[in-house]
Length: 177
Image (cartoon, rainbow, N blue to C red; front, side, top):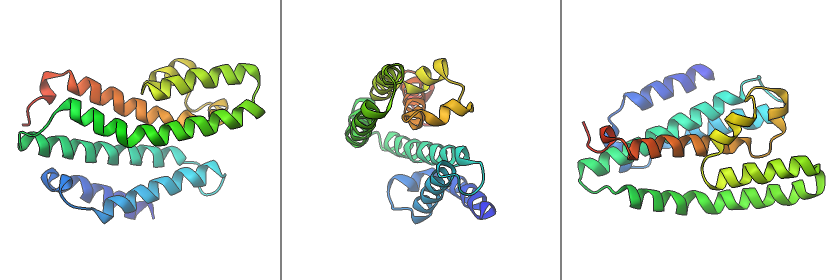
């Protein structure tokens, strides 16, 4: 199964980026499903101890799709970082708010006061798209206590946001090659 996923990733990145913003890609959805499955199996103690691989694959797929969209839009001279961020916020924020509220409600009843304060910090960081920095400064990603952080998965949104913000403010990302 891993060999199939690996060969799919290789073929995914060897195709031309220009076509990605235009058509639906079932192979990408399949890789996303596989990545999510690895994470779910890991968290339920099933399968092999490699749920982080699923997160990494999902992160790489997101970067590929976002990069392809930006590249295509820039080639067509129809790209704006402002519009890009507005679309990203509209797409991600509603689900993120729902997750943060659900986690907050559960943690209100089951956590210690110290854990609840930490949750507040992590929730604010997640909503501001900087949880990668906050979690990096407060946790060891692979420590056993990390598995108990209900907002750990938001690091990837923060990581993506950091990369995109760096790219938006970098001259090298302003014009396609």
